[in-house]
Length: 339
Image (cartoon, rainbow, N blue to C red; front, side, top):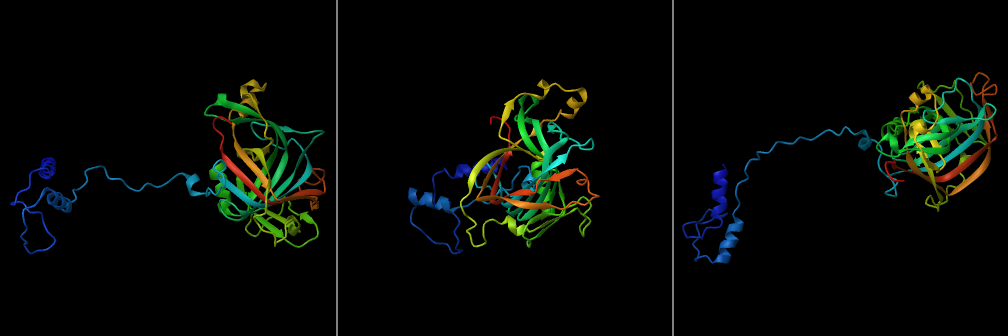
């Protein structure tokens, strides 16, 4: 086969003779005058050799097993922040009791004063996200500090975060939202029945530990949600946003941090043997950017039953909520290298 190919290639460079006539599309023989070199070149270009079979190793379509490329469209507006969320949220602060039953997050320290920390709940309604519209409910466990994070390829690249807010549980309203949280960012999210009731003069967080939805999932109900819509419906949804506030995010423990990062390694912190075992794994770190068009402080009620773990002094609502509308939350890739 190789010899045949070489002979065929060599024949293209041999002088043309009348004995050799390139094949024509017509079946009738047509006489022609002696060919010039230019005509010879044109005739050779018209000749096409048959396609030879390929002797290379065949390739087959490969199944993409990278879940990050399957779930979560990169819908960001900035190359440094490939994912974006748009909508509105409320933060309802409460004083939460830190008991022995509370399991503090790994690689961070739970901060408290007189047995209480600042927690509460964050409720979000996303109109735009990498997986479409959905809602989210986060129970906040308290204030944390000294978060040990990974900013490189090995443990020696550890750094320490200053102070942040830790979420004990994160619930979402759709299965695809749970998938994107778990597979793309490593957030331990759970699907729940999250119900918004628009009517009402005051925001009411009526969620309870024992509430179960029709599908056997945790149920959360927010009444008076129309109060979270600061911007009227006739306002352009592309109204100007302000802020661009940088925030650090450690998704595996559902914590948001002030943008303060100090040099230091886990090993430099004085810890017991048990604490060292718990903090061998440095937390993955992402950068967030937060912008919004409007924010307000509004009254908010918290309905707690006596049987709830939040009752009997377990949670002391402050009666107010921070409402943020037309928010833009941008998420960057995992930090690995220079900040």
